[in-house]
Amino acid sequence: MDMEGRLAAIRSRIEAACRRSGRQPEEVTVIAVTKYTSLETAEAVLAAGLTDIGENRWQDVKPKWEAIGDRAVWHFIGSLQTNKVKDVIGKFAYIHSLDRLSLAEELNRKAGALGLEPVKCFIQLNVSGEDTKHGLAPEGLEEFARQLAELPYIRVVGLMTMAPLTGGPDSARPVFRRLRELREQLNEQQIYPYAVTELSMGMSGDFEAAVEEGATYIRLGTVLVGSQS
Image (cartoon, rainbow, N blue to C red; front, side):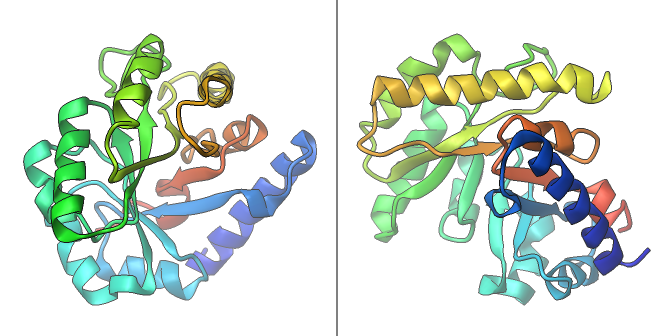
């Protein structure tokens, strides 16, 4: 199946998940995760009608970014080292992996020095509690959110998490539901002068459950682009 066919099948599954949960498909943005794939694959994603591309290492995305530029909306979805902020600042519209104050402070410093708009970030939470996953523990969310509120060049747009890789949608669903609840709690605390609206959750094996539980961004790799290099 070609890219257009795979995307059509994915969109059909998203629409069905939205019907089951009383949502609209327009509320869900598909991020094509093109890490480990070629420039040609990224171009095929754009040709198929998607505009949002997710990558996790600057050294890998650099040739794609230089070729595609602002034809895509770029999402940094991997763990970001503080010393790599200089490479990604101003190039990625969204950072999905903000999980520590030192990273936030460096993003804030660089954005301010360059005169950029506030960096749109997702706070990454380790809802499942797995040792192998990055992210804050949920109980640390409020304190971290308040620290971020002091940084003028950081704008928290949402929360992000990764579900367990084993167990399928059944084990993922409680993780997704909990992230939605944490977003609701964060908004009730009124830490920011705006509503935090986004949820980045769901990947190839569990995105339908994520949509049913409120995902606004789903990060799709294998099911959309395969694993070609």
